[in-house]
Length: 270
Image (cartoon, rainbow, N blue to C red):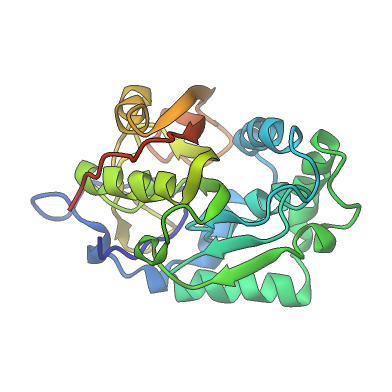
């Protein structure tokens, strides 16, 4: 797999500009519009963020503080709240991100302190998991920003992997979507935990007035087809469409938890 990709709850839908599915390599992810993306999605706490945080917190608060030596946020993008949630359980969090623009934002947030707009997100995270430190800066202390792609991952490295609005938001090709999900599963050791969120039936999209970014419309049945052969304890929940966000073309959010199977996962994709 030669894809480079970023996380992103996408922007306004847009039909493809060319015949055939656009693959991840067809988009310039280094030009990801961080400022517009944050303005449209994360400058205030939306109902879907509350739902994702509540879902993920149910996983993290069952874990003993410091019990996870190393975790992964795959395609971290500029979204800080998945990194916050890992701040009690994880000794180290690798925020793997290929986009130069998103890497700059993440590193600035860690070095200079998070934007004030992230504080309501952390207040919610801490209310759901009291083991989190009092200060947001302390919760983010385990985070290491790693510039790279899914092909840089070593099989079985992590105790837990998280992925939020990534695989379905970077390609129109379902085979490539499957390969990205496979890389996500294989990143954790057998029996390792997986937690993820996906936009349901997301078409290709714009953020602001920028270029068209590729996306793969998926539903719960597609997630089961991809993850069931690779995992145990698979659970998929759904959040209703968030009407406080701009019209993205999605029909809601799908939330996933699972464990990697002890037996080797099937290898799909290019």
